Amino acid sequence: MGMTIYAGAFTDDPEIGRTLEPVIGFACWHTTRLAPDADAREERDEDPFIPNPDYIPHGGMDLATPNARYVFGTLGFPISASEGGEWPIADIQAAAQQALDAGTGLDAYLRDTIGALLAVITTGIARGATHLTVH
Image (cartoon, rainbow, N blue to C red; front, side, top):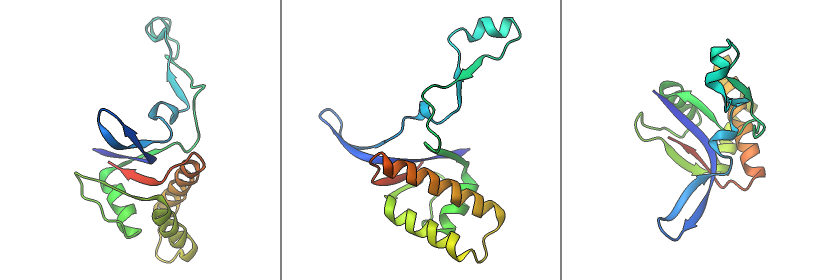
């Protein structure tokens, strides 16, 4: 099981009320997407994936649930295996930067993952994100 991590902002929808939505759509997270003619490509032994013209580097990330719990717990934002969480993005950014600056006790996985998380945060803030969501 995995958890999805993205930068978001609140929007007001007249039908459903206030919701926290990603500032970068999920379809923009990956470098490739399924081609419109994927089945025909498969039959010709071609790659069914094509470059994604909407790709935005660091648009969001996915982590296995135990890894997400490890990373966010290390940053001081514990999450449950089933619920995740949402926090002001500036709070997570400060904790992540402080962890990298201190560096004490961080294994290579944590350094790399927190660095990737900071990239998602920076990209999200540039697009108006106010919160970071894990679910």
